[in-house]
Length: 88
Image (tube, rainbow, N blue to C red; front, side, top):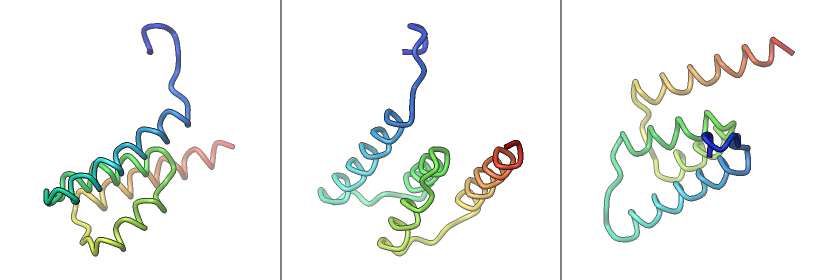
């Protein structure tokens, strides 16, 4: 895609995050227990694409306990968001 000179847009990223959430649900439905790494990847994806509320919903539904990597992702993305907001 990038080689062809096309840039990914928000719709592409939203679709990827929906697919990631569907894959997570499929894993759970067949008995695979997601680990911290799985949830941290989802957290980072949701934050990078401006959807931290989506992860918060997942986090509260599953009763997840955030760890160092989780907080690191949240703080990093919040910091980027703040810098972008200040540039405006």
